[in-house]
Length: 123
Image 1 (cartoon, helix red, strand yellow):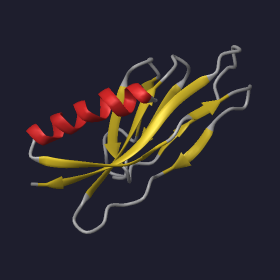
Image 2 (cartoon, one colour; image 1 turned 90 degrees about the vertical axis):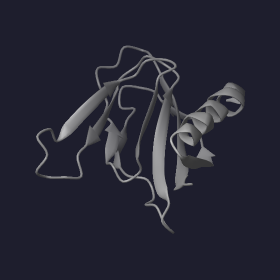
Image 3 (cartoon, one colour; image 1 turned 90 degrees about the horizontal axis):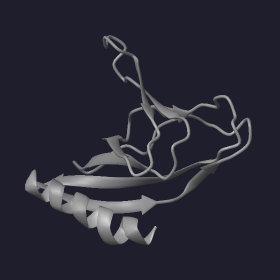
């Protein structure tokens, strides 16, 4: 968690700064999914406000499972996209995109993630 706050967030802030956005960190937490029925049903995160672009992200802390993302456009060519968990990988997406972690075959491993929310404000 310290590496996330001391290394990852400053790096993300610099990357968004180079693209003309001020990144404001909102919150993070650690999620642990254990047992044969460990899952997180489809959900979205809060919408942006006051002209801010709200985004969510996931830092994968283990190599277990997939996160499924669903299009908010019912006319999209692809409705679902699945991202495998890879320790150290970060996925950032608009907070309004529905996503889930569904239970897969349980092999005794535990899935750990560090989800977070940020706002991007155009400079």
